[in-house]
Amino acid sequence: MSYPDSNEIRQLTQKLKDQEDISLEEANRIYSLLSGERLYTTIDPNFAPTTYKSLQDWYKVVACKIEQGFRGNFIFTIVFSDIDSLNKLLLPAHQAIKEHGTFDDLCNVIRVDEKIYSALPFKHLFAKMLNDSTSKPYYKMTSRRAGMLYYPIEIDGKTYTAGGLLKHLFPVVTLGSPEDKNHQLSRSAFEVMVGAGRVVSRTLVVSHYEVKLFTLATFMRHRDVPCAAAVDAYNSKFVVFTGKDQAPVVKYALEVPFEELVQNAVKEKVFDKQMAKELINDYPIVNFPMKNFAEASAKYIDGIVQKRLEWQTERRRVEYEPEWLEETR
Image 1 (cartoon, rainbow, N blue to C red):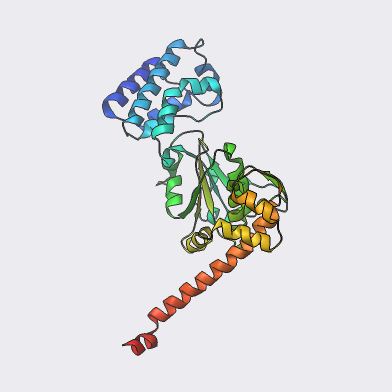
Image 2: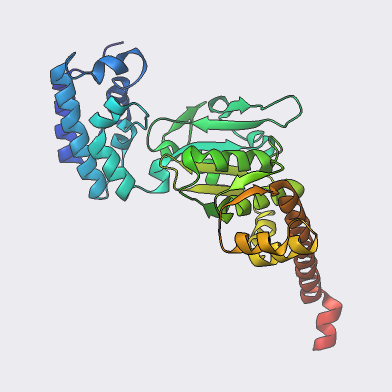
């Protein structure tokens, strides 16, 4: 495979300046310098100094275009990485996309359960995740490149995008917290939602964000709600999706006040009033009974949700029942 030299990169940089974008093939050529075996020679300024300098100039222009609100194939040349020397090279672009980017630009992981996976036209892009022989599997799509949600996927002459998958689902909640480092909490919560993981019996909780997260996860598992989740490269958003039919179920669940769940936990003797006070005030709690609280809360929420669903069903029946309409005329 041939790689672009400094000359070609300079030409593409000028094209981006003049035309606001480059072709997908050209973007993939620049990306090729930052992947595979070539990566470690590219990010060494002493190995190919002219190429390194031309890439520095490229990412400065990319940053400028992002700040001006432009989007296009050039976004796909941005790489999310833990390699310090690579991040140093991409620093202007990283700063710009972090400040001005949308979730579509920054999303780099999608997880789906078995039900949603079964209907996907691009299953080959998802890896099967299985924690142990007793848990359910789920499927994960990742990308180290920005713009994963709108990168074109060609299959049998048709073009798809990962974002197109999510548009057929309903975002029911967007979460995020600084304590969710590397999305470890959100990943564990998703695994609980789909039956691939379990809530720990007791744990240290830093704030009630974690408690709310696993309570929602336990409720969704209890109701067997089909779901997908997407996260971004900077750990700021965890978006949960479900189908149209199940969206009201999750919506009603989220409307139950947290304070009400805490009061119910005291009533059910999950913990005492002192711990309830600490939880409401968002204090760190050692040895918190996470599993018992989540299960008691899921059961309590389910009762409320079921009543609301029954009320909605009865309301629709009454509104559209001909005999009832005739009596009111």
